[in-house]
Length: 334
Ligand code: SF4
Ligand code: MG
Image (cartoon, rainbow, N blue to C red; front, top):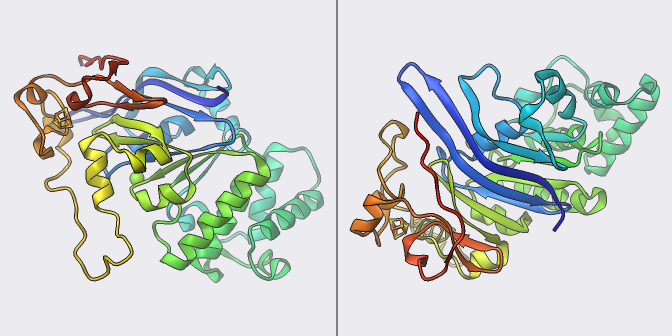
């Protein structure tokens, strides 16, 4: 298969005064060219740290890639200098976040901001860049484009700002768009519109998308493949249809149980009992054992590796032991 991005055995650690926090502790995922891969998990699962690692945006935090490879078209971007990583951002990889306001310049007109993205990566005139900005904004479906080009971020609604962010992210035709909870702050109607827009632009541009979310409902809308993360690890991977029809890992099953369904209105959402463990006191064995209704003595003693359940479908759970063992999880010291 043709993978635009391969994350191999990624370990991203935070070196804090209180000790080392292993936010990402051995993640392997592949993003197929032209596809959308959802990385899903609760907060604290390591999904955002995974995306920041890919973007080379750990600088300024205490985070560091301790081990692993991030292959973009086969080249390891972990080995690049900060300057080379900066050049990748906006040209080959772009990102949109939950809160566009923090990524937009409050005192710069919308048209200028989008044009600025173009000028950072293309040697063309300001006028040509503004034309490209206008065309891209029009594609995102914002109303009254000529007018909006001259407006400031605070004059736009949340949904319009997110469309502007998408325009900024896609105007340089990146190979990969990383979207970290891009619709979480929006109301449901606007959220659906933005997801539609992303699906449509993906088809038009062929951009591959790494979609970070806590929401399996969103995954169902936009993703082709899913990796479910828990405690810095991927615990289950497969294509969307398989994961929804045949979830194997108890954590995935728990997440699916918490999706509101038609007719559930008014009923309390089922959620997984218990909390994500404190990274400083990570349990031995399977990290989900303290919350898992199926946990056995074995689960508490030893962490399972990946078992292959079906074509492209793997699960890190002892209950799948009848499947073929794919990879062993190697617990790292230090
Ligand atoms: Fe539950 Fe054991 Fe599977 Fe972990 S390995 S998810 S504790 S059954
Ligand atoms: Mg996050």
